[in-house]
Length: 173
Image 1 (tube, rainbow, N blue to C red):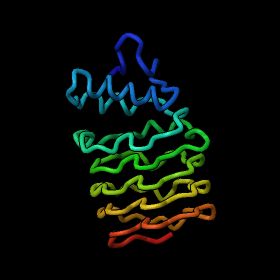
Image 2 (tube, helix red, strand yellow):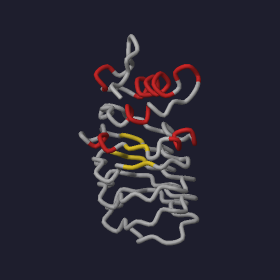
Image 3 (tube, one colour):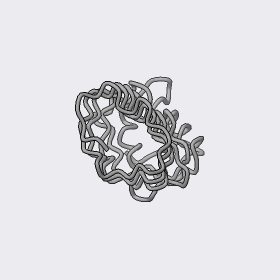
């Protein structure tokens, strides 16, 4: 897709300035007319979201499960903004791909990021999580996740409560 074509597009030239722009873009492109359209799956992957600070719950709905997969590879072109939150970002059964090379060095919260996501098993062991302070319930009920996280630097983490509840096996950090 070519991206938002609506007058006054919330993310002109595919660049979202903040969370309000990202939400407006998703509503306009994915739910225009009140019904989810899978055409937005392609346009979402081309957004520049480097300036967005809060991704909390942005894809926490089963609706995005229709994107098979929701490929967000291009979101890694630039590092995420300082003090970014990924809390509950993919807390639903969404087959999300392209996270392997995300530049996460500025992320501070990953609480519940993949909670209740039974289909995610992406290789995120190379992420720089050195500034993350909360992994609370990160993989809670994410029963398919089975990746090596032994290279994660967790020195600044203050809570891991429920981080791996219900996981069957994982290379522990």
